[in-house]
Length: 356
Ligand code: PMP
Image (tube, rainbow, N blue to C red; front, side, top):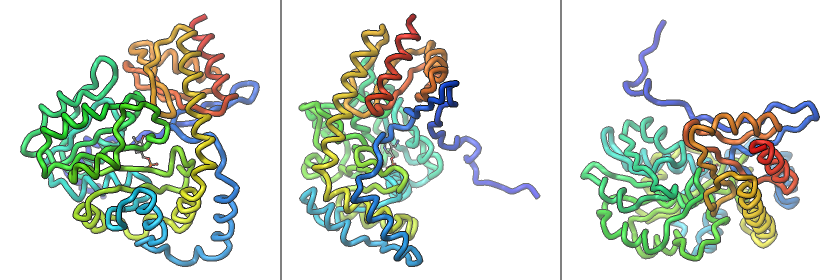
């Protein structure tokens, strides 16, 4: 029997995840299409996960996750009431939209940006309002400010922006906050913040301290390399985190994810070396791609953006022929994640072939 689905669901596109490239004849398949961390988990994390697997996964995890919540609160100088966890920061983004919007309310964000924003917005019955990036692939916060209406409930500022790697400045954010009404929540999505070396970039947590209507989204998926475990969190006012706990799916954050996050937080110094390497590889890849004649937008994330426009699909196919999957936005550009030095060498070799 045919089912009746909620009105509007026909306009929702399922999230499209990056795929590995088909293997080349010499066996190469490099996945650089999902901004993942190319390194295996720290040995301390892997060890703890094995312990839990053989000891306690017959039990439900703690919903409140008090140890992790406390550790995050003290790491960022906030209280436990300011932290809300989710199964990846994408789930926390969904919680924010569900908690703050009613059908017909507007969620504002730059475009192009993280593909989940319009999907999650439509799923909630809210209306996505997409404001084009400027000519340098950066957020146009002045234009975004002018699109705020009395239906705007939530604004996402993705900083650094996925997929362009660009950042806003503290001065731009301050100017923007001056025009945002106090009852509108501005979510600074800092999924890639650990890779940001721009001294003018705002620190989301400091911004939250200055503006109570700011929430910050963080994830353990990128710099911490735990994408497969699914854990992220918001730092926000107590009023917001209480609402997030109401809409959260119970037990969505597994015990494995909680424990791995806790150990990763305690191992930040060890992780820092990996992050530094990814940052210097990003700069090497940017210079190498430019030397191969490709335009690259300067990035503060663990990926780079090539605004190839109509050539995007053909260049993406060329990378795939070299066994490298990148993320193609046909007609707009390509996003290439930073991998290990050897994977990045393969990218540069493929890029030289593109232009040959
Ligand atoms: N925000 C941004 C900007 C992202 O690019 C991503 C992942 N691609 C996420 C949030 C979600 O990450 P996760 O759910 O793995 O924490």
